[in-house]
View 1 (cartoon, rainbow, N blue to C red):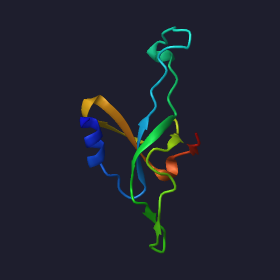
View 2 (cartoon, helix red, strand yellow; view 1 turned 45 degrees about the vertical axis):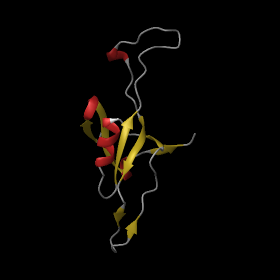
View 3 (cartoon, rainbow, N blue to C red; view 1 turned 135 degrees about the vertical axis):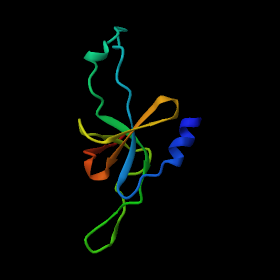
View 4 (spheres, rainbow, N blue to C red; view 1 turned 90 degrees about the horizontal axis):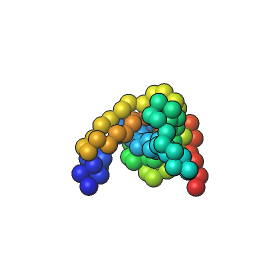
Length: 104
């Protein structure tokens, strides 16, 4: 509960997007535990909060093209790590850094 309240207090600015990365697989379907070094880098996450959007050269508002709750594909590197209460880890990305939105 405290982490949810902390996320609500963190409001990204401009075209920034707060994302919670998906958890890495720690076990196979057969129950074999995967060592931490062998786990793949997680390249997808869920949008938790989003800024109001950016402005173009003419000063016109450009609304974000994604919304809270969307599952997105992330670049392998980049973003700013943000640690909130209860050791929850989130990442801030620019909307333009997000590679794709994944449909259900």
